[in-house]
Length: 256
Image (tube, rainbow, N blue to C red):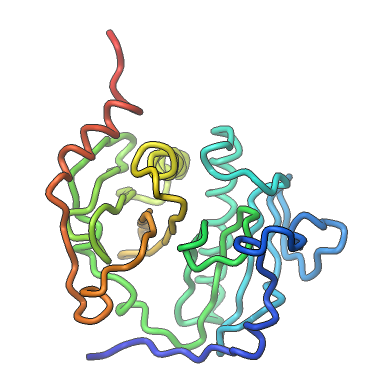
């Protein structure tokens, strides 16, 4: 089986700050006066080089989403959410078009089960000098039951989940309707954190490109199924239609 195998600098990794579990640790993203390696800013948004470049043969960047440490996407105004996604996608695509990298990934970790280490809301962009993008996703993972469609953006719940159980997809037909993409991502995150499961305190967002068109996947994080870890067996839940209908009822149904 062909895979992407990348080196990880464990010595540097041990030095990374962490305040998700160690809640008394200071937040480096709140100390804005001492941020270094800044690439670009837009209001509260800051893109900077990651001081802890633990992934070998890659360049890592951090996108700080807000000045407010204990906030997240459900708290943002529509204007801020739109600006965040436009800013992030712009720099993701700029790195892709630079010619410096074989593959560039754009993602977010949030919560103790997401793989993240800092509570302050942020996203990450990583440029790999050697990484096979064709091995990073399967187009089937973006098929699903449509929750809502607007401006040629399909917001769905995956029928072929990447890991298993409930995953949301945002699938535009072009890269133009980024504000609608941002709206759907915000709804998916709000649903996961406030309506989905009372034990859900973590999620990931992953961005991909299929034939030059972006895709986004939003997935809740719990303990990963051992059958997926050991045998790559994915589970499709039996209540997908109920989940779809519940999201529609909360966010899209209109009282006439």
